[in-house]
Amino acid sequence: MIRKARQDESLQIAQLMLLAMKDIVHAFLGNCNADDALEFMQILVQQEGNQYSFENTWVAEEDNKVVGSITVYDGAKLQQLRQPVLSLLAANYKREVSPENETEPGEFYIDTIAVHPDHRRNGLGTMLLRFVIDHLVYQKEKTLGLLVDIQNTKAKHLYLQFGFEKVGEKQLMGKPYEHLQIKRR
Image 1 (cartoon, rainbow, N blue to C red):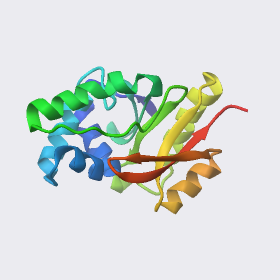
Image 2: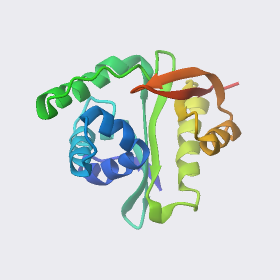
Image 3: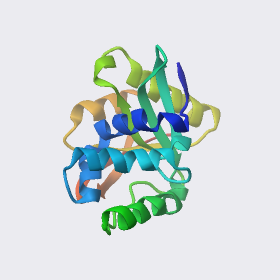
Image 4: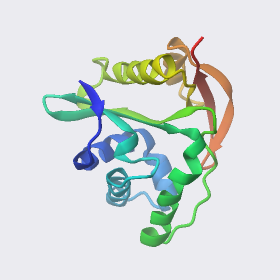
């Protein structure tokens, strides 16, 4: 079952998000401490009004457990949604970072998609991706975008099979990514 995330699921969602973006979170924090990374993400998922908030997340649920998640938000709101992230970094971790813009106005952006390791290879990631494509691209007629690591040819191939097309390249925390989008035709 795919449904909107709830605030009380912040720990499970944060754990999933870290599967997808651990390196970026460590770069934000300036360390590789797993406990710091989990605490940071859990705070953000639990809060409203930021890019990692439960408000922007759908989850896949199986046997009353969150086993997958996908976080998507309006790219036009990136600066507004990013500010609480930067504020938390400054206040709690004494860090000031200036990440590049991973999205832009005119697209809804898939920030993270992740499936618990025990539930991989049974189509949950595909279901989450199909759900968001159907909901945003085909029902709401929005452009949907994401970044894929240039080195991750397997993921890129999967996204291309779904109809995403390369529209450019972007940097995020100094690392190169391909920018892919899908639009209703």
